[in-house]
Amino acid sequence: MDDKPQVLDAEHGAKRAKPKDVGVSRFVLLLVACATLPACWMLIHKAWGHGNHAEEQNVLGKVSWGGCGSQGSRLAECGDITVPLDYFDEGAGSASIGLARYPASVSPRKGIVLFNPGGPGGSGKGLVARAGKLLQTLVGEDYDVIGFDPRGIGDSKPSTKCFSEGIDYATFSRNTILSRSYDLASNLSDAEAKKILIRQHIEAEALYKTQFEVCARTMGDKLKYMGTSSVVRDIDFITKALEGPNSLINFYGFSYGTILGQYLVNMLPDRIGRVAIDGVADATAWVSDPYYTWYREWLTSTTDAYDLFFQRCSEVGPLHCELAHEKAEKPSDIKDRLESFIDGLFYEPLAVSNATVPGLLTSGRVRMFLLGNLVTPLSWPAAAHALAQAMTGDGAAVLDAVQPRAGADLQRSAVSCNDQLPHAAPAPGAVVGELLDVFRTVTRLAFTVVTTEPDAGCEFWPVTPPERFAGPWNHTLSNPILILSNEMDPVTPLRSGELVHKLLGDSSSLLIQDSPGHCTIALPSACTNNATRAFFADGTLPKPGTHCATDYPPFSVDAVRALDVDAGRLDAQARLGVILDRVRKGADYDDLL
Ligand SMILES: *[C@@H]1O[C@H](CO)[C@@H](O)[C@H](O)[C@H]1NC(C)=O
Ligand SMILES: *[C@@H]1O[C@H](CO)[C@@H](O)[C@H](O)[C@H]1NC(C)=O
Ligand SMILES: *[C@@H]1O[C@H](CO)[C@@H](O)[C@H](O)[C@H]1NC(C)=O
Ligand SMILES: *[C@@H]1O[C@H](CO)[C@@H](O)[C@H](O)[C@H]1NC(C)=O
Image 1 (cartoon, helix red, strand yellow):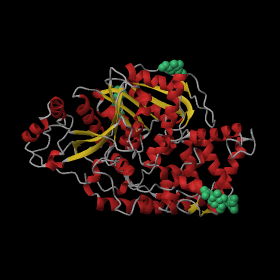
Image 2 (cartoon, rainbow, N blue to C red):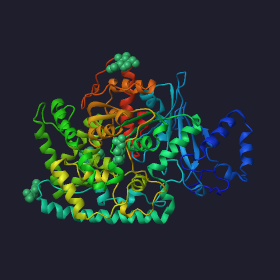
Image 3 (cartoon, rainbow, N blue to C red):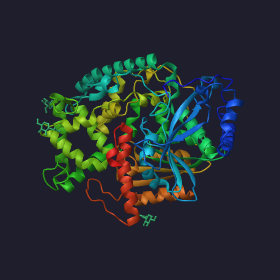
Image 4 (cartoon, rainbow, N blue to C red):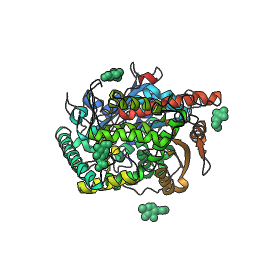
């Protein structure tokens, strides 16, 4: 299929009174009938007056399944579903959502669970096609696991492709502030730091303006369909198409998938079956507050994770953490050495000639590397090795890890800018003043998150979505949801999980895992896994105040392996934790399958 969906004319599209209905039940009835009657598609074809092949491909609700190709697992099926492009304008035509299904292996089969890996930008279709079996360890082998590529992402059409052939986001952003991140030394006075940062921020703003002007030119109106509210309607549509009009929605979302999950349960509170959100970000701020005010709350656990990194580094010593000079060295000495190296890079960046893309190691890039690795504690030994190499003059491994991926586009911006309520352009002094205060009082990685999680510049976003859900976030749900938060998650703190739990009250239960890392599976726990499986098995919720320990102490090479049944699942989740991180970055993960 090419990028442009065939546009159904209004008369031939689904007849819909309200977006709530989206005509899906009518299609589902036809689909159910079609499952038993091969000639059925011909009848629909005739009844809806579709005269040619191109239109036939775009019958709303039509699901096509086939193999997943060489990349997918043998048991997985891949395909797509045709959905309304705009649930509020039937004349707008159709969109196609990429799907993958990994089937239940235990009967009786319970139904489906849709997964979102996060990002936004991660391909759920690719994840399920290749790692569906691993995902099943989270919810039970009696569910079909369904992956989908949200609007604009992966195999879904239209896709977010602002840059033209031969130019991608990596080319556009190379060596600008967007890929170097903000440069700063901690010994600068506030006044000096502010002046330097404002210069950098003004450059960032000009780049946001440039990139969104490019999007407006190349994508135009198609951009407005990529927001989270549209994705929620797709999840409902897909569930009804696959499982029947009365089936409730089962969903598991990681990271940004928790924002999608909060939209889902509050937009469709009566449609909720089993929903779990893991690594919770705060949807209320995401929608309503200017981006630069998020981080004071969102990075509240970052310093705890950062300090634990040095604490554990000292405990395991140079054999496993090359940043330590000796076992039981004072953690603050290890940290001071690293931070003075980073400060030094502000005054004199390191030339790195043998990186995959040769370039400079700057203070901003090392901070990006650090934040990126606090997210995945299983990578701490490798991260310490790369940093130790950089400190002795070889910055290749660190630089390679933070360069933007070839082929990337603005998929994340298309989601976050369609979601955010409009705000006036923030004054550079206000943005820098706020972040500098977060840098001084909350975490040294404050400026880094702006460039590692690009949600800025939306004042230049050229379109308005058909629907922009903005709460309320406190609905009573048809079934309570499971909220999973780590005690020291560097990017989605426990505080956000507590906030969602408070808003949803009895419609939710919060499980806290006592570990660092982003999402509970960053460091697997048999206790958390058992609680999650019990929830998907029959709705059992963990008791209020439940804490789970991890079975993989951070920075250790040998996991504590409890019982056999746990060991297999824990191993699956350890791999899954790393895979999900790579999915969100758009990186390869074939070596882990
Ligand atoms: C900050 O540190 C750098 C190098 O470590 C030094 O050259 C510079 O003079 C210091 N600046 C201030 C304001 O202390
Ligand atoms: C990069 O070059 C340095 C010497 O300048 C060498 O020691 C190092 O092994 C090289 N690193 C890689 C990743 O090739
Ligand atoms: C839910 O939130 C809305 C808007 O914030 C508020 O007006 C309402 O009182 C809340 N309802 C409950 C039951 O707390
Ligand atoms: C998890 O559940 C399995 C059975 O499925 C059990 O053998 C194991 O002991 C449980 N582990 C924990 C930590 O609760």
